[in-house]
Image (cartoon, rainbow, N blue to C red; front, side, top):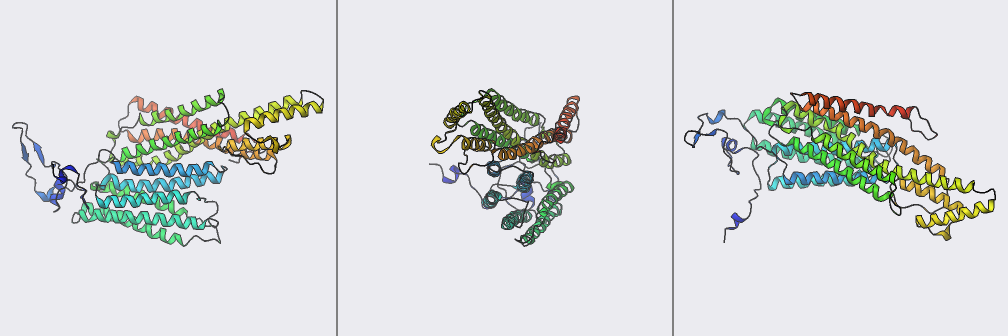
Length: 511
């Protein structure tokens, strides 16, 4: 029987992030079989010869990471779960301008938190007990985002001041974990000033951010509304810029030979997958108790094609092997506005499916009532026809006919239409209310969806054009054509918002 240590992989408590030859130069033992860079193969004898360069002249290098590890992919799953949870809470509420702002604000915090963890993982992450404990803590932070995010609303910090205090605590914990991790790397590279300097800058910027987050906890109260939460976004942007800038200045801590491009691409794929999930949920909601109409089928096919074409437009132009150090960092950071636009576009795509179904329902109801009203001048016949129509609708909508008269039914049917637009299968059966008021409020919501859908679609294509321009140094004619087409179509789509500006129904949204 083979020894136990040969049958199971040994997981060290602490593992060096350095290449093998760097570990020997730094006085640490090696953990991974890897030929040092100062060895080369002799073509004449097929043997290995040693370079005579002195040890002190050799640079300290970190281990290469060509692809994402399983633990990194597992971390990305928590991101999509978090995004899906928050999107679900937003779907069940009336969408307004302030809700869109809160949605984007929460996504920004989630995205930059993911970025900060990723910037550490792609350069210094090595599987060990220590790193797995830190990763578990980061996953706990993501879970905390999901729990607290359901009440995230920037319109009134006084009303939800406890929620904002909790967010500050969560970000404080995240930065403390990163401080411990960078301090751990600093221990391994001690004595090498070219690597110590950027790490000290990383530690300083996270320490500063942690102190500010600690102070922000006490800035929220139940008396006054405050904008101090804006400091979260300022801190996140400054941290990212400092990390990228210091990594460009000291190439020993750069992102070359890392899988940063792959991680950003995988996040884009995850967001597209979340769009598919939201779309399928909308399809289920709008067809409960009903059949697919040709128009709804066409809308669903168009939505699926939009997601599929977005996938092709993005991944067909990504060439991770052609990135330079500076362009790589601009490309990665530019994904934040791209992902914001993409999330809004995918959310708008699913909502337009529900809106199309609700429009058909309202048009059908209006047509049937008009036909009954003009069918006869005799009010008795009209009342009888209305009763028959209502009875048929009771069956279609699963309502109890004994609890309603025709008037109450019409109000309930309007409420049902509103619930469908909200992608909800339930409807209220309480006291009747003005159905036209409900429908106008729903139309008000979808004016906003119409605006941000086309703006988001335009911005998505514009950012795709910018990503191509940044990522490729030696562009061919096809690259210039791709940039021009994406930029032109994106600009035209974004300008569709001007059409809304010339249309002013009673419930129109001010843009």
